[in-house]
Image: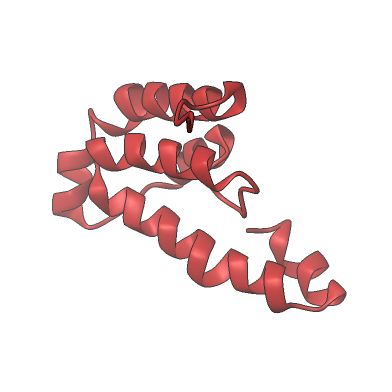
Length: 106
């Protein structure tokens, strides 16, 4: 029998993302959507939760991304593009110099 329950790390990422989304994203999402902007503090908050950069545990990443996207789908899309169109490819195909130069910044 397969167990689909999230492990402790995955639950932690999900909880932190849910709390960040509820306290920092939800109150401003509509106004930011209309303004067409994402302030640096929102991006920093997503990074603090662990959602920016290449998360080694894909299930934890998706659990957190779902929580963000429930409150503001545009932010979820920005995080997904950042991770899977940028960070993943550098991590997977970049040489050591490229990884050192870019991944820590991203």
